[in-house]
Image (cartoon, rainbow, N blue to C red):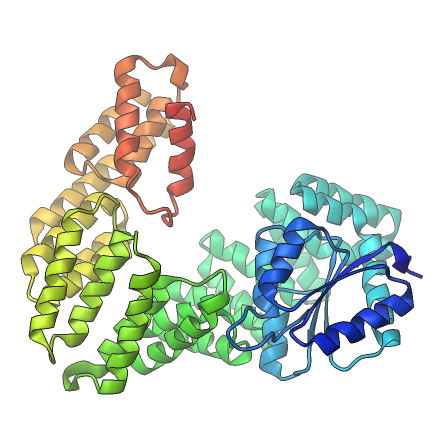
Length: 534
């Protein structure tokens, strides 16, 4: 029996009668500490101030509010909930779409209304019994120590072999976090040989994909889908593999199936929209982006790129026949939200104006010209770099709006900043055949690769000379500048002479204009902290 009088509860529901009813049930069980909240925002605030043993959270808190899935996303991502705590998703609905969406972030239980005190108590007691058995693992997870998680899994399995099946997934996650790839691969394959489980298929597929073994990863996901065809995450994984292999058409079909199974995932809808747009399925792209915009209003995964994607899909869908009044209103609202919510982001302001200019170019050329002029003026004053994708989009829009010279300038800057990425250069090549833009990129890529090889061989002086030559061609190139700084800092900042330290800092100052969404931003921050003693 649980010591109910020692446990704390948070009940989250928009109906006061339900909150009162559940509180009464808990009081009858002996619970003394019961807090309530009527919105997800209040629930998150409560969890940031206090640790709860149990959270009973309604899935649907009403239109225009965070739902239970979004609250769980926030609590887990911001580590506001312990692994020892119990999160139960409660709902009056039991449609497949609702259940699958609620389960994607893996709450401890899913409870359908109505329920009584006895069934609630029985359900919670079973969850707590399991968590008590795994307490050493859960506590290590809370500390963020994968090595301790692994040790706890081994220890518990030895103490009581009956616990071994409960430890499998925790052990796999620990091996993954410790980058023990060979051991993890063997472990997952042994699990799948013994008793196939969907999570093990997902983990193995992700591992093989990470190691660029795409053919093997594809087979794993295909086998998994045959065995567990109602798991959306398996379709996500197969879509990733297919995209990496260039089969975007089939990848889109996989994401469409995942969305059919679980339609309330913002990031999945956004990825589907982007892929459909690349496949020139403008109806499909519009539908997916529209869902992502709607569902993302109260999600931590809300992203202005979704709004821009929707606007682009709607414009592209209009094609030569132009846009009807209803579509123009939707585009205005979609872009207006970006402009309103991101007033300090010059890049987004530029892109929103160019998108709007593109949408009215056929119906109101004067307005299109005015918006284009405003966007170009903002571009000239921008300090932060556009992302590669954003720069490519801006260059294309400028060309469509008759500003070919300005578009070429954006492509040249994009090549300079991101030129060591072959995928970026391929995208640039689809928009221009100008050898001055493409040639510098090829030379810089070669010099950068030579520099990396020299650095790995311990030839620091030679590596630095190669990176300098690459930077002479592309002074704003993020990867080359970071490589230059790292090669200089290799001996330790205290061992650098003034000239070398200044060279290092200058390289980092230049790439400090990179967007913080860039995958290399963390590396930049670490190098900057070393170089500037921060």
